Amino acid sequence: MANLFLQFGEQFDIIVLDVLPVNKVTDAQILASKVDGVILVVPQGIALKGAVLRARDLLKKVNANLIGAVLNCVTDAASGGYYGGYYGTDDKK
Image: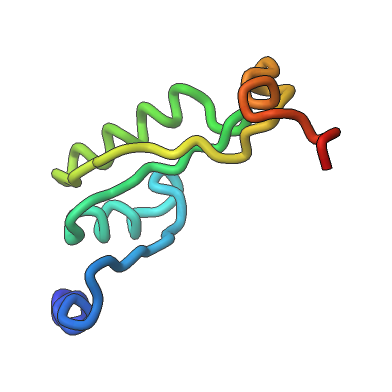
């Protein structure tokens, strides 16, 4: 696997790998220990706080470089209207 990363690393500045959830299989932990940085994707309204903390701990356990998190599946209702009010409304189409 290291050879694969070296081969692609010579051709590209950034390589993004989308893997299965870290709490479900060990593949994510294995890859996380081999790459430069990891971004944890957290679906709003689906992921429980305990599961997110467990994912973070599993990544720390393999010395992954956790550089941040992305909150996706964000809805206006789930965010208390913040995003709709901040970014505008859909009625301006």
